[in-house]
Length: 150
View 1 (tube, rainbow, N blue to C red):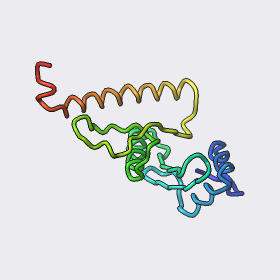
View 2: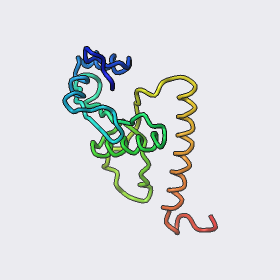
View 3: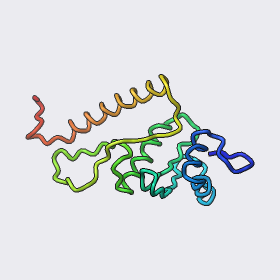
View 4: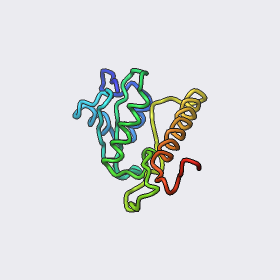
């Protein structure tokens, strides 16, 4: 989120996004004092750009627990906004009749790079997430559905 002397983003991805949004990103980040620190968040309304809003969530520069903390912050922001396209969170509704709540279907994360390194990290995160979700489903299953001998 660092900016140069002319208050333009140094990061080319943010610079391009700010240009497409007519400078509203740099303006909002200055007004909100959003620097991208872990735990910080900012919502930018972007009607007419294919979305109603963009949530910016700070992940900081530390690698330790960065993805876990970042994904938790994304999930919290998505839940608060009742978003439909952000992040596939794990909420076990298999045995509940709560079908009116919106279900998240996709996520677009900017700023983590591209190529084989990112693909490897995302594959690892997907594998771990699938295992955690499966474990939660096993634990949350009622005993008449999943018995100790199943």
